[in-house]
Amino acid sequence: MTDAQLYAVWGWSLVIAAVVVVLAAALLIAILLVARRILAHGGQALAAAEAIADDTNIIWKLDDTNRLAEEVLEAAESIEGRGGHIAGTLQGDRAASGGGVE
Image (cartoon, rainbow, N blue to C red; front, side, top):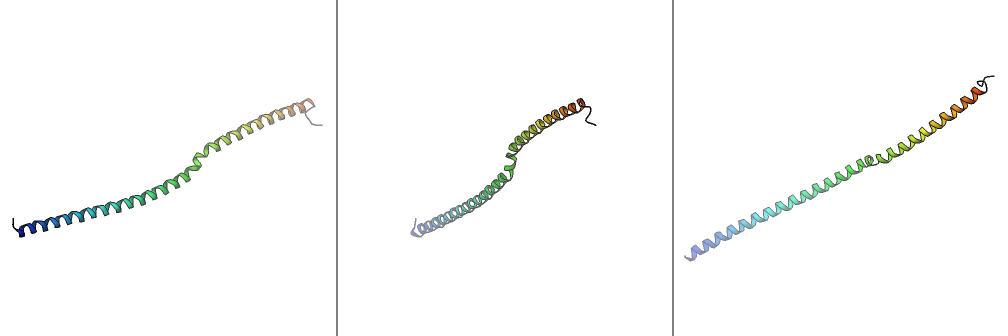
């Protein structure tokens, strides 16, 4: 192989190596840009998930509301029963005394 041929092979090898390095660098830059976009979208998704969690917190508090409503219902039924007993007793006292009309 002559010196000219050796320099030609060496020159083509450098060109091919440079092309490979440029392609690898381009791919790495593309990967970096995609990773940054993924990070940005992940942040947006996290913010949306937190907003959804805040908006649905009231659903988890319904259990407390239902428990309190049951207690209020029990108290109202107790008052109704005792009031009915008192009213019945008063009606009986009135009937015994002649109807309460003079």
